[in-house]
Amino acid sequence: MASVQDLGRKGWLQAGVSGAGPMDPPSFRIANALVGNEPNAAALEFAGIGGRFQVSGPVRFAVTGGDMDIRRGEERLHAWESHDLCPGEVLTIGALRGCVWGYLALSGGIDVPPVMGSRSTHLRSGIGGHAGRRLQAGDRLPLGRAAPAPLLALRRPLRQRPAGTLRVVPGPQDDRFGAEVLRLFLSAPFILSSARDRMAQVLDGPVLAAGGGHDIVSDGTCAGSIQVPASGRPLVLMAERQTTGGYPKIATLASVDLPGLAQRPTGRHVRFRAVSQAEAEDALIVARAELGHCLDALEEKRPPRAKGGMR
Image 1 (cartoon, helix red, strand yellow):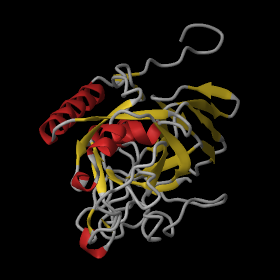
Image 2: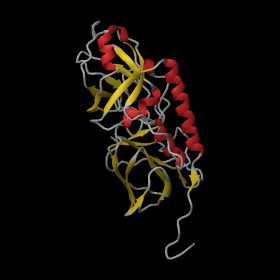
Image 3: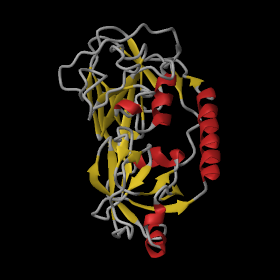
């Protein structure tokens, strides 16, 4: 599931194309900052496992998203900081531990042609990125011109994301569900099913029956919309959601909690807590400020000690 992503395309919902972009925007932005890129530079997103990479010229790189095994040749490296990679060296990124999505940023960014104003891959539509698809072994990607920058490390990690309770704003079609169903939605645990991708996350748990029916006149969706189809299994719309839908939306996941849901592994439990739109907006403002503080606190790494003694 490796693909080229930037922060997503805007202005094409009326054409049926959602924004795409990273499933975990904060981790994506930190990766770019660590290698001296602009926030919207294109990088690689991968799910589960990273892969093996080589370059034709020297670059800086950083890997973020969670904990994983990263090696340059046989040398173990740390996530959440930048490193050098030279021609002839092999970068190997292993399996993610305790999360789902990882990011590999390279200095200069991935210089694929923009499509509809973005370099992001929209897999459902087959546009953007590298030939509109996920990457395959042997693919070659062009890099942009890199600006000089030091090697950096994240010394102030983001605050812990919500462990299990996620904030939702009720509606817009919560009136199609009875009071007992709404109570169940906000009290019972749900399990993140294996039916998940960049479009949506299906939840297992209690069946949510819509007394008003599961078919509505199609209307717009947003990232975080929680639709309930006739199966009664809620599904949370993600980065590559469809732009309209004909299922009632019992609630909308607060934008601030979307990355946390995306990064929770399959089989984990989640619960929902109702908040007002104003509370959700305030929480997002706080989270964006916290991300800004983390980016401002990036520290230059000390030069490595020379082998055989002090430099």
